[in-house]
Structure formats: structure tokens, C-alpha cells
Length: 164
Image 1: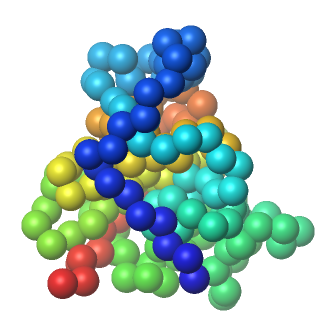
Image 2: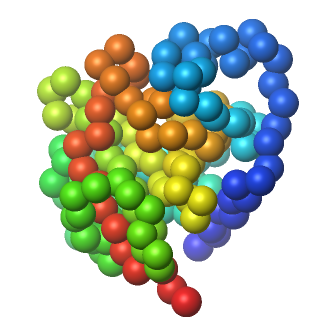
């Protein structure tokens, strides 16, 4: 299985018009600070990226067009997403604080409680997100959260030990 590599020190310059579009969709980005860390690609999505993969799109669709872990219900609900992360050692936790020797993910949901996005915490305490078929960004968690954003708010933080 191909795994994505990320480098929290990389930054890619995009035109200000592109950044304006991002900041319109995610008003908190400009105030909290962010950087674009990869070019646009439709090859993978935020869920795959949160699992450290960049070779396929992950989603629990009923038609099985996209990848989803075996023996995890193909339902777009928080419970199915939590089960998918638990398959690789994540457990629910109660804060997004950086913890030594742990990696965290945040699952976002819309107003109806349906998962919309996932972000992964980087070793520097910031978060990395793949914005649909668009770019990857490094950001503060609150930078992409909110009622007026495409992703809604964080519903669950999970963590797992980092392999040493």
C-alpha cells in the first residue's frame, strides 16, 4: 500500500486568487495561518490523507467505487469512521493537544452529524488536510472548522501511539 509522505517544512506558492478562494470557503484560515504543502490532485482525498495514503480515494460509498477498510460498515456516519481508524490502532481521546509519541486525527461532521472531513496532526502540533481534489494544507485545527465552512466542526479526536 502506498503511503503519502508529508513534510511540514514544505510550502508551495499559489496565486493570491487561489488563496482568496480557500479563505472564502474557510474564513478561519487567514486569521489562524496556513500554508499550501502540495499541488492539487484528485488522486486521493482527506480521509486517505489522514491515513497517510496518497494513492486512492477513501469513502464508505455503497457502490464500492472507493476504497474502504474490510469489515467496516460502508455508512457515512461517525461510528463507521471511528471503526475504520480503530482498525489501525486509533482510540477516542478528548483533546487535540499535541502528545509525545502519539498521532491524532480529527473527524469533522456537518450539521446532520455526517462525516465530511478528517485532518491529521503533524509532529509540530499543526494539522494537515487534503481539501477534496484540491491542495494539501498545514493549518491550525480551528482554521477549517465552523458552521459556515464546507466541513462543519470537529466531532471526534482519535489518537494512536507512533511507531518508534
